[in-house]
Length: 320
Image (cartoon, rainbow, N blue to C red; front, side):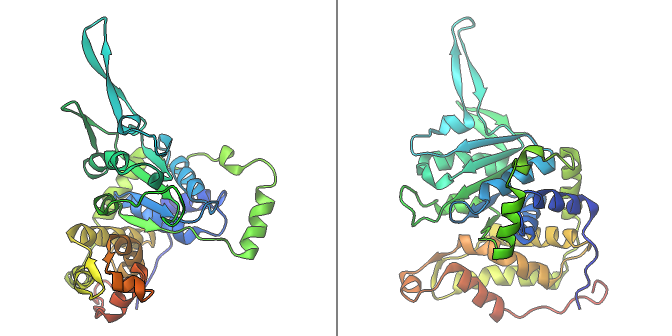
């Protein structure tokens, strides 16, 4: 049996703070926060107007991190994001002018409206926490998080994100439409001034770094590690998949499960944590065969099949 403890005060304050501007979305907020606590980046994909940008802004404010927003457009250049070297006539030298990526949280809004060349400008920053320009490496602040939003690729004027770019996102999440009751509450809450303007930080960057370190110390038993690896491996051998989750997916699945366990007030990971993390961590990393689309099968559906087929380990009695 899985035992859950109260959510730590650190996380509870963040979830409650975000709830002031995003009604009825604690589940997706918790997963997004888990991604940040695991040291990853988050991609939010959904229809326009569902609150993707608001979730990103509210999380950034709540965490007390510097926040910059870049509206991705077809004419956006890589240097507009990372920065450029500018010649100084007075010194006869080039000086690096940092771009908006030098911040705590970068909101890459509608990332799939930019060209693949500009999208790829984020790769080094997301993977290594640095930007290299003209052969010089510039470290980014810590913590550093990219929260990107995108509309479904079926919408006009969008570019599909390359697999290498998708793989850098720890989680891909959907905010979803509110229920009718939640929408009524939202209308009442937003009738006047938008609450995002009054939102304040409830923690600090130093506290976030401490929380990330605590998440890394959450215990993962050998059977649960084998379960994580088995899920990733099963996506690679599925008959409708051409490219499944690799080792980075396994690391991401374990890290997100650790964060979810910590958010639940536990010092150990259960199979339930892994199962909850799996759709957001694995689905966007799968490339499907054309037969899958002809059969109406989705990446999320395949992850569901894998979860149902994979034997679930019995929890260690010492940690149950």
